[in-house]
Image (cartoon, helix red, strand yellow):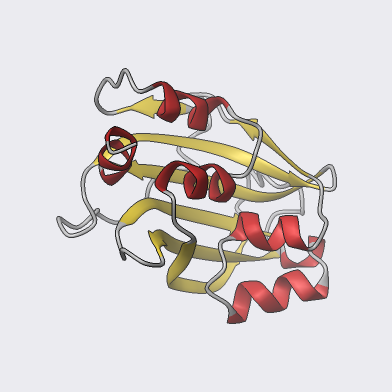
Length: 174
């Protein structure tokens, strides 16, 4: 589900919302700089009773909150909350998620995984709802979206992304 907070006529930003490519790749092309994942937390969780990933209620999952920032500028572009099944990821992916500042999209692509998004509609029960407030230093949310990320055709990540107003400035500067 895509939820605009403010209208934008930016063609480049609209492509971001519609593209099948990873958010990491698109944002790097849009901003002109490599992104890093500033991981706020990555902690154990359990699958809820409605189990959006189909792993089974109560099964172990991992919850991650990260801010995607420009490596050079340090500007925050996206805040992403993910709930994912470590069991459905290859060991090299699990290790990089735990130890590196690489965004999820880059890790999956470099490991050769096939990825596909399935947007969640407004009836997702709030599963993708944003967690925590965006600080003034990070910027204002201009739109949000939630989706399932299928890795090798298996639902592996439940993702909610808050796109920040710094993207508008990056877009206008191009």
